Amino acid sequence: MNTPLGTPELRSRFEEVFGAAPDGVWQAPGRVNLIGEHTDYNEGFVLPFAIDRAARVAVRLRPDSTLRMLSTFGNQGMTTADAAALDPATARGWTKYPLGVLWALEQRGLAVPGLDLLLDSDVPRGAGLSSSHAIECAIILAVNELTGAGLSEQDMVLATQRAENDFVGAPTGIMDQSASLRGAAGRAVFLDCRDQSVRLVPFDAEAAGLVLLVIDTKVSHSHAGGGYAARRASCELGADVLGVRALRDVGVGDLEEAAGLLDAETFRRVRHVVTENERVLQAVELLESTGPQATGPLLDASHASMRDDFEISCPELNLAVDTARAGGAIGARMTGGGFGGSAIALTPAGAEQRVRTDVVRAFERAGYAAPDIFRVRPAAGALRLA
Image (tube, rainbow, N blue to C red; front, side, top):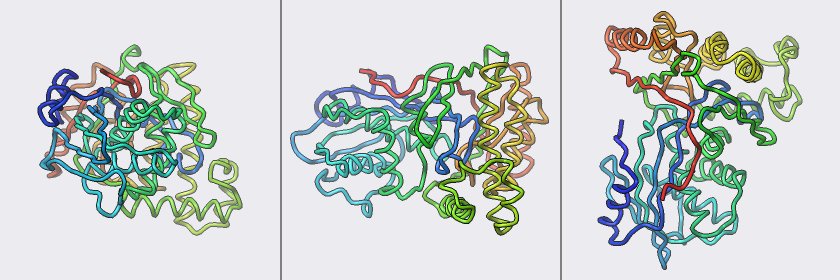
């Protein structure tokens, strides 16, 4: 994992590279989705939280339309583009995320400035923790403030979604950027993806004697790939056949009738979304009444649904989940869009080391790459650092 630079170091590095101090430094966190997978684009419910891993950008506006972008990680050197001629076809690597945000703002009728940008991030890439949305949210927060665009949180959520959908080419919903922009320390973000309303619910695992472990399988995934798009298409087909606006409008009690109307594969996809929405509502109720220690069975059921009905897990994720549960975790599931990435394990603090050791050994026996395992905590949403 990339070791993050402190704010003074990032400012100093910016000045070395670009020859002048930045106008400011902004930060936006990655996210873990506690429960509610592939429900967001079905106008359903999700329960993510912002994590204590973030993307940071030092930015300075320029008097011309030139964009100069550099990151502190990877081998990609300085990228130069023209803010007046943004083109999805020519965007490469991590720069497609800031370029996509600027393009989306341009599509809203805003004047897109030239700027110098230095990115630093310790959100693992390809791990299902929304490293791309962290970059986008940090950028849009910076540009919104520096240009006086006056965008609301909701405006920024929708602009970054458009950047993902129409510039990057990933048909994602609004969960990731909502968590990054609207998160709070010690809270999960209960998001209704139909009306974009948010309620912050308590999620303090450590106060309950628990830790939330992320198990990064090192199996890279991409929302721009075909598997994600195919699942979304199945959901849209299911909603169309069932005569509803979105699968949000299908209840658990409707599944028996749906089974007779849909082909077997589409029905499984629909069943996952419908039951996952119900699990999110149950998790919110438990967090607000009993506490995180009561949510373990919901996490387990969510993983089984993603593995069997939505078919977005993989052998490494299944091994991580099964081994963590056997080692003492009270609940575990894959998190993120699937086809790789990370699992989460809600674990009693006393069992943490056993879970870590058992998972590493299981991966080694299976011949898989060594996983990266680390704690995460609910953290503040996007903000200006300097």
